[in-house]
Amino acid sequence: MGTEVEQDYFGSLPVPSVQDLSAKVEDVPDRYVRPEFESELVCTDATFEIPVIDLSRILDEESRREEMAKLHKACEEWGFFQLINHGSEEAVGRMKNDVEEFFKQPLEAKKAYAQKPNSAEGYGQAFVVSEDQKLDWGDMYFVRGLPARVRNMSFWPEYPTTFRETLEIYSSAVKGLALQLLALMAENLGLEAEQLTSMFEDISQALRMNYYPPCPQADKVVGISPHSDATGLTLLIQTNNVQGLQVRKNGMWIPVNAIPGGFIINIGDLLEVWSNGKYKSIEHRVVVNPNKERLSVAGFHGPNEDAIIGPLPDLVKKDGAANYKSLDMKSFYKLNYKLEGKKHANDMKVENGTTKI
Image (tube, rainbow, N blue to C red; front, side):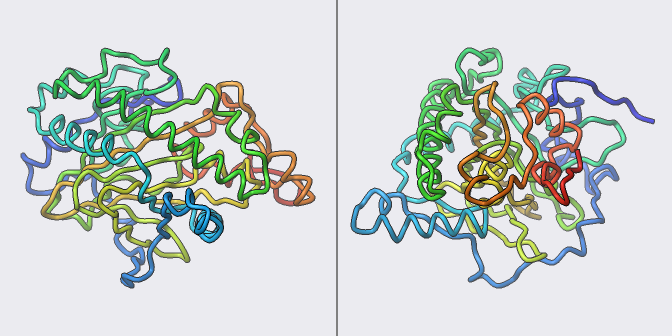
């Protein structure tokens, strides 16, 4: 039996750098081989894609109603959409450049920011809780962006020299965009904006920068295992033109063709629960390319520490019943850690008067 880790529901055991490993081995080590995914169905219809929402059309009174309806349908039916004309293009461009430069550094330079025991922050992997578990084919660099008081500046990179300033600018930009989207979603749910946004007054934000090395045996590995996001709202950018994100729908995986300069937005487990199931937190994964590296940055946005994760009363009243159990944040994070990042909202569902937890 391998070592197991007890910690703050976010930390991870140390594992080798996949970027370094990929340059040294010809055959994929057994710990990364994932035969359970080889036979899963992947959609080949290029016209079947997640919706695209144009924020500029929402801000234009003439097109607002139509685009808001598209946003509502995307949240209900997909839980994912791409966002264009979002107004944060400069921050996105800076972040892409600095993330690419960071991962180009030699391994020893990156290891200076290696994760510490019982902490997710730094360079490493997430949700590695046992020496026996299978691993994903990818490295991450994880920092806490907000609230500012929780930042550990020793993990904010000093190379490239612009990176700290870029992180500050990007953190602020995606926070503003997340709050704007939450207000729009509240409106679409028939709520006052403050019924959602007030839970994010002391917003929690984490930034995860991902590096997926190429793998000649790409069909044997997975970049990130299937999961849903244990957060409110995720905003992701792809820093190069190598695709890999896939969303599960209708029993198969739908490849996401990322639009350059756009965000990929997904509903988190918390928003599914708050919406009483109207909006869906959808399982997704990342596959790797046999010849090219892929890089991305995910921004996770969660509520105040004292928030209650449960269906909003106005929606329960409208629907006639609460479809999910209510939990405080600490209990929710315990569930998150126990399930290793897998589908949490399902375990909070009320079925026949009971839940799984």
